[in-house]
Amino acid sequence: MTTSKWRLTKGRIGAFTEATGVLKAFAHDRWFFAPAPELDLEVDLDAASLSVPIDVSIPSVSFEPEADDLSKRELKQLLDNLRGSKVLDVRRYPTIRWHGAYVGDTTRGRLEGAAELRGRTVPLNFDVTIELADDRAHAHAVWSGKLTDVGIAPFKALLGAIRLKDTLKIEIDAEFERQ
Image 1 (cartoon, rainbow, N blue to C red):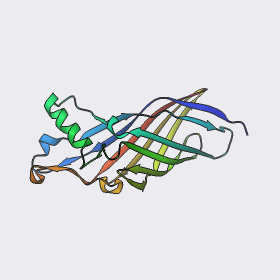
Image 2: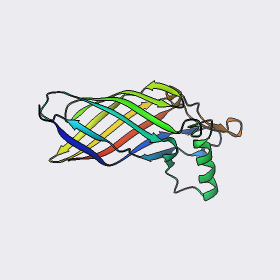
Image 3: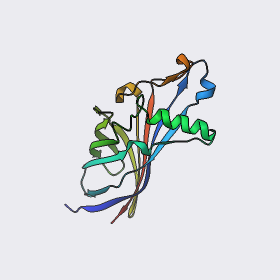
Image 4: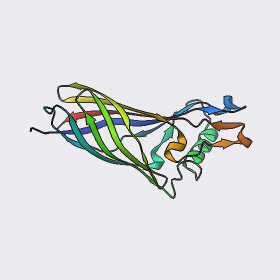
């Protein structure tokens, strides 16, 4: 068994939400992004199948909306809602953690594990594709489910005239370099 060390050099985590309601035009479907955490892995690329333990944490407050279409006031209100007690509740739960393992080969597999979010531990398994080239690797992971699957009630405002659908898509893009 020959293991090599890989370091996450660039990446981000994205969460996509969809708006609904009578005033949907004012809410918009939206991506929220957080930078990927620091991560070093040991991987045996010669193995027929891989099982690589992973344990990462990110500050809840690090998620920012893709918000080119918002005024400063609207952005502040969106961030207050995102970070407030009805969504991420960053004061009570400052960290989001995922622990589990990558299981698969050097081209595709799954991140199988659980997320700790808002004081709850919930299963969160991602489908993963990998592009490996010399001493670099790009991984793309996707999970689709419901906000309520991860313990978040769909946000609503103006008596429900603006609200989020109970859907959530999480994507991870990560660039690794062999050390």
